[in-house]
Image 1 (cartoon, rainbow, N blue to C red):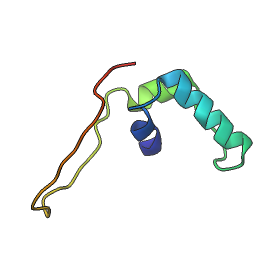
Image 2: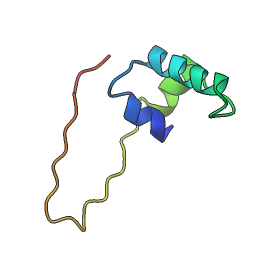
Image 3: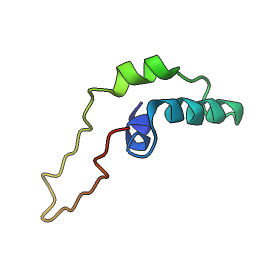
Length: 66
């Protein structure tokens, strides 16, 4: 799901499902979750970032909602 959280910046939940389905077809992952499973698992999650050891950090994101 961490991988899906990253890709959610670029794809909506249906797109994430399609990407995961393709990865199963290619044999990269064993199974995929459907739209609802993906939505419930990552909808309200926020990634953990530990930048305590960094002197300088610059982050960016699109910020739009799909």
